[in-house]
Image (cartoon, rainbow, N blue to C red; front, side, top):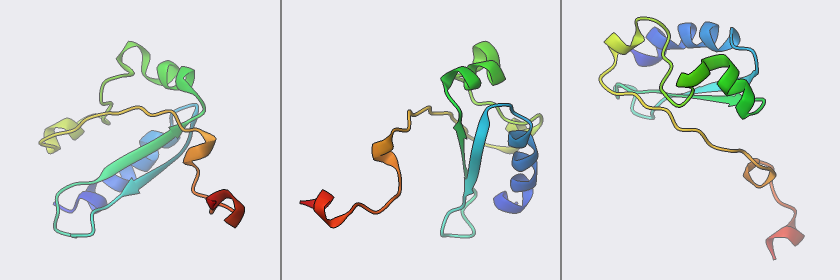
Length: 95
């Protein structure tokens, strides 16, 4: 099974259907034979996540049928703040 080829199109459709999902990305391992991917989504706020997934917002929400294709899966939520942006700091900020 090619994780990226098999899952990517479905994850894109699924995430685009969720109100409040601002963006997502699919991370693939350097080893093309590794049977894993990481799906990361960024949401407007925690309320948007709770609205999209209801009481099960802290559980992994795979598109229908995906759990049968995977051996393990998990969900982790993180707050993203200004200090976690990917911009390059100005030289004065590094001192």
